[in-house]
Figure 1 (cartoon, rainbow, N blue to C red):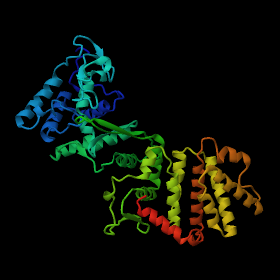
Figure 2 (figure 1 turned 90 degrees about the vertical axis):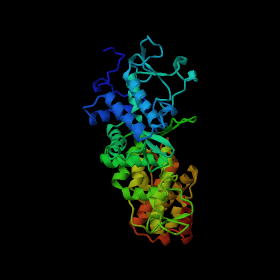
Figure 3 (figure 1 turned 180 degrees about the vertical axis):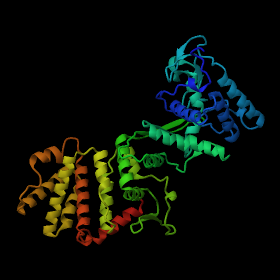
Figure 4 (figure 1 turned 60 degrees about the horizontal axis):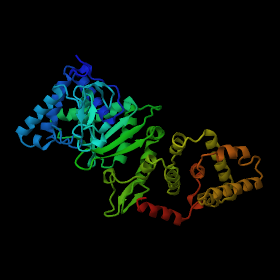
Length: 479
């Protein structure tokens, strides 16, 4: 058999990653089918899936294949047209393809394999160009030249995507365990539905927001893998190849954020769930601190998660945009104390500053030491609010440094045996190069709220009733 002829038996398909998300995902779907149906050839699997796409799914894969042998208007509608679609698919993959340069051996633009190549456009390769726009392709060719291996993999792409909103979603990961989760969520679920005669098209997610869906996917992967050291890098492609407006948006969950999620979901899941819930944007609603739930302002009824599942969430937005959530955590722990909630460990904050911010243990210990000095001074003077107001009111770096100088002076005047911080530690650890000053303030306050909780300090000694009302009012706005 010549190198440019792809045998339609399983052993001749290469599943080596190419780096292209669509080709590699289609390959994962095909590999799963080969393992699931070891007695079948690739040609038989193509025929089986073509029957599903055409007859069970009613040709509805336009967002993957635009005007293809399956989705073109001449191939859908009547039984006769659908029969022609099946024949067209069989003939296309049965025969050796005619290359753009018919007698010239070339290299596949995706995997680099040499041989006779197919000319692929949006009818099989998502988000590529159309024949009239030859400037889209290499050397002004009339299509993207790909080998038959890549063409076959692309055919199975509809099995491994899900619909989120009015577009499709595809997960790309650098960890095989995460990839196995995605394959089971898509390909296996499709096969299960097909076996139950309950499959009508591409799987639809309960989510309409790709950002929220990505965090749900990460949570499910973490729960399923259940490994303390497990980390990953997730990318969600939210795309459509349909009509005149093809589009793709990519949402990335980097390794540090995934490692942080792995810790909080496994070890402080309850606190994390409440923290995330608190930060959905929900109009005309209020947060019930007693039941840790949202209350609708329309009928004063408890809202279920499904009511706001696709609303914007500040925590998710900040983690995806590489913005700090330490300020949100500070406010969360403050509210836990103010509203006299059950004691909540500050573990979430520690995981965040270590995994995402990369804060060194020496700096963490020093900030905790300073916070303990502040608490001891406040306890001696019976003025907790005084010191909290100073720290919370520090809105700029120089203001925080002024507050620290005042604390250092008060500590000296109190006759303490040790200074609050030594000069070298101040330079090396408290405000090292590259460290945002606000993170130091926020972590210091988080430690103080923990001490207030641990020592069971009366909240009336710390905040005014008006402060509590103001906090509730902010929450009513869905902030």
